[in-house]
Image (cartoon, rainbow, N blue to C red; front, side):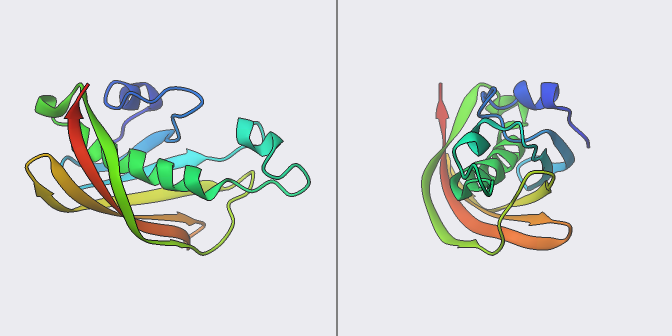
Length: 143
Protein backbone atom coordinates (compact mmCIF):
# COMPACT_ATOMS: atom_id res chain seq x y z
CA UNK A 1 0.00 0.00 0.00
CA UNK A 2 1.39 3.42 -0.97
CA UNK A 3 0.35 6.64 0.80
CA UNK A 4 0.99 10.19 -0.42
CA UNK A 5 1.85 13.11 1.87
CA UNK A 6 -1.81 14.19 1.86
CA UNK A 7 -2.93 10.70 2.89
CA UNK A 8 -0.26 10.62 5.62
CA UNK A 9 -1.66 13.90 7.00
CA UNK A 10 -5.06 12.24 7.31
CA UNK A 11 -3.46 9.67 9.66
CA UNK A 12 -0.92 11.56 11.78
CA UNK A 13 -1.36 15.17 12.99
CA UNK A 14 2.07 16.48 11.92
CA UNK A 15 2.23 19.41 9.51
CA UNK A 16 4.98 21.54 7.98
CA UNK A 17 7.64 21.98 9.20
CA UNK A 18 7.31 18.90 11.43
CA UNK A 19 5.90 16.42 8.90
CA UNK A 20 9.06 14.48 8.04
CA UNK A 21 7.63 11.71 5.83
CA UNK A 22 6.91 12.38 2.16
CA UNK A 23 5.53 8.98 1.21
CA UNK A 24 4.76 5.56 2.67
CA UNK A 25 5.80 2.90 0.18
CA UNK A 26 4.85 -0.21 2.20
CA UNK A 27 2.27 -0.58 4.95
CA UNK A 28 1.01 -3.48 7.04
CA UNK A 29 -1.18 -1.72 9.62
CA UNK A 30 -0.21 -2.39 13.25
CA UNK A 31 2.87 -4.34 12.03
CA UNK A 32 5.23 -2.53 9.67
CA UNK A 33 5.70 0.52 7.48
CA UNK A 34 8.37 1.83 5.11
CA UNK A 35 8.56 5.56 4.44
CA UNK A 36 10.59 8.02 2.39
CA UNK A 37 11.87 11.51 3.24
CA UNK A 38 13.59 13.46 0.46
CA UNK A 39 16.07 15.74 2.19
CA UNK A 40 16.59 19.09 0.43
CA UNK A 41 18.79 22.11 1.10
CA UNK A 42 15.55 24.11 1.55
CA UNK A 43 14.80 22.42 4.91
CA UNK A 44 14.55 25.08 7.63
CA UNK A 45 17.00 23.31 9.94
CA UNK A 46 19.89 23.55 7.46
CA UNK A 47 20.01 27.34 7.97
CA UNK A 48 21.54 26.74 11.38
CA UNK A 49 22.71 23.09 11.42
CA UNK A 50 25.41 23.65 10.17
CA UNK A 51 25.52 26.48 7.59
CA UNK A 52 29.03 25.59 6.33
CA UNK A 53 28.42 21.82 6.36
CA UNK A 54 24.67 21.04 6.39
CA UNK A 55 23.73 17.91 8.36
CA UNK A 56 20.20 16.76 9.23
CA UNK A 57 19.87 16.82 13.03
CA UNK A 58 19.81 13.36 14.57
CA UNK A 59 16.70 14.17 16.61
CA UNK A 60 14.82 14.91 13.37
CA UNK A 61 15.98 11.60 11.85
CA UNK A 62 14.57 9.89 14.95
CA UNK A 63 11.34 11.89 14.64
CA UNK A 64 10.99 10.89 10.97
CA UNK A 65 11.49 7.22 11.88
CA UNK A 66 8.90 7.51 14.65
CA UNK A 67 6.41 9.15 12.28
CA UNK A 68 6.67 6.15 9.95
CA UNK A 69 5.89 3.92 12.93
CA UNK A 70 3.05 6.27 13.86
CA UNK A 71 1.47 5.77 10.44
CA UNK A 72 1.54 1.98 10.97
CA UNK A 73 -0.06 2.35 14.41
CA UNK A 74 -2.66 5.00 13.57
CA UNK A 75 -3.76 3.71 10.14
CA UNK A 76 -6.57 1.45 11.44
CA UNK A 77 -9.87 3.31 11.61
CA UNK A 78 -10.23 2.63 15.35
CA UNK A 79 -6.96 4.53 15.98
CA UNK A 80 -7.70 7.56 13.79
CA UNK A 81 -7.67 10.75 15.79
CA UNK A 82 -5.33 9.35 18.44
CA UNK A 83 -1.74 10.42 19.01
CA UNK A 84 1.28 8.15 19.20
CA UNK A 85 3.56 9.88 21.71
CA UNK A 86 7.10 9.03 22.82
CA UNK A 87 7.47 7.24 26.13
CA UNK A 88 11.17 6.52 25.63
CA UNK A 89 13.97 5.53 23.27
CA UNK A 90 16.51 2.74 23.56
CA UNK A 91 19.48 1.47 21.57
CA UNK A 92 19.78 4.71 19.58
CA UNK A 93 22.69 4.65 17.13
CA UNK A 94 23.74 7.15 14.48
CA UNK A 95 26.05 5.68 11.86
CA UNK A 96 26.41 8.29 9.08
CA UNK A 97 25.37 11.90 8.51
CA UNK A 98 22.33 12.75 6.37
CA UNK A 99 22.92 15.69 4.01
CA UNK A 100 20.96 17.65 1.37
CA UNK A 101 20.14 15.50 -1.65
CA UNK A 102 19.84 12.28 0.36
CA UNK A 103 16.70 10.20 0.26
CA UNK A 104 16.05 8.76 3.69
CA UNK A 105 14.30 5.39 3.65
CA UNK A 106 12.86 4.38 7.01
CA UNK A 107 11.54 1.01 8.15
CA UNK A 108 9.48 0.74 11.34
CA UNK A 109 8.31 -2.56 12.82
CA UNK A 110 6.04 -3.10 15.80
CA UNK A 111 7.82 -5.27 18.38
CA UNK A 112 5.17 -5.25 21.14
CA UNK A 113 1.76 -3.81 21.81
CA UNK A 114 -0.07 -4.23 25.10
CA UNK A 115 -3.15 -2.09 25.45
CA UNK A 116 -2.14 1.43 24.48
CA UNK A 117 1.61 0.97 25.20
CA UNK A 118 4.03 -0.45 22.67
CA UNK A 119 7.54 -0.71 21.31
CA UNK A 120 8.78 -0.10 17.74
CA UNK A 121 12.10 -0.86 16.12
CA UNK A 122 13.09 1.52 13.33
CA UNK A 123 16.01 1.94 10.98
CA UNK A 124 16.87 4.70 8.51
CA UNK A 125 19.12 4.25 5.49
CA UNK A 126 20.43 6.23 2.54
CA UNK A 127 21.40 4.38 -0.64
CA UNK A 128 21.18 1.07 1.24
CA UNK A 129 23.56 2.18 4.03
CA UNK A 130 22.18 2.38 7.56
CA UNK A 131 22.39 5.92 8.97
CA UNK A 132 20.40 5.47 12.21
CA UNK A 133 18.45 2.93 14.23
CA UNK A 134 16.51 2.90 17.48
CA UNK A 135 13.77 1.31 19.54
CA UNK A 136 10.89 3.59 20.51
CA UNK A 137 8.52 3.16 23.43
CA UNK A 138 5.20 4.83 22.71
CA UNK A 139 1.72 5.37 24.06
CA UNK A 140 -1.43 5.74 21.99
CA UNK A 141 -3.48 8.54 23.55
CA UNK A 142 -6.67 10.42 22.82
CA UNK A 143 -6.25 13.94 21.49
